[in-house]
Length: 368
Image (cartoon, rainbow, N blue to C red):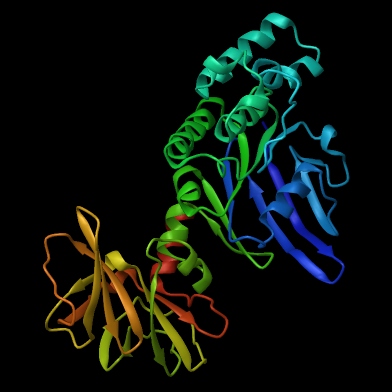
């Protein structure tokens, strides 16, 4: 397997810039996920790594070799497309084994590898069937098998689970990660589904409008989002935002939100913009009658062990994740207490996160 290094990668289609100067490294044996909404540039980036698109600028290094302008067949990669591409005149066994046949591998070795791969994907009972008669989910499993069986330098996957039903999709998330752990394959995986990303990734790059807004571990991206976009895109429900104004001074440890004083992690920079936002995850809010930050119960969503409670405040709806045993009625007035250590602060204009003591602690933990 091999490290993938992307340097100042850029792709423009006429005046439209699909990928803007991306920089990241996928370590040897790492499971790396590119996450973002449709049209953000993640698939275009993947296709450039694969050699299916030529970049407008920048470099792509695979195992230390510059492959920027090499053709796909010269890169020793396996690509799983969003829409499966199979040979309809071949059965399942021949489809999975075709890459090995093209390499001139012995028949016995091909059969052993195909059998192993089919068993992993739970399609060993389909090996002698024609792919043209398979359901969509089974056909996508065959496409996955054809990539897995090759054991290339790296796997590139473009939303490979998108056509699967929910039950098998959840199973395949687990099995793909288990496969990765077993063969230590360098993997770049593209998805718009945060559940897939958070479940499988060692590192995640969150993209928006062709820009990587944050690169880091799932925990870091969830706990310390670098931008308001990341904070909203990751999490279900997403991070809540409360407005406050007046900018921030370096060393500040307190702000005023809706007339209530809120303790925040120490601010490490001077911030001039008047329009600011405080971010808080639903699970870091609790009810406290003594709090001056108040609202009225708007509705609840029962989830068994917990419930999501929507509270209508002066800044709009705020959602809190609380114990299922708390009984609340629509219209009931409640006070909201925020976990000070888990707060994020943002400039509303740029959307960027303000540097605070908690963000520094996260960086120290990552490098320590």
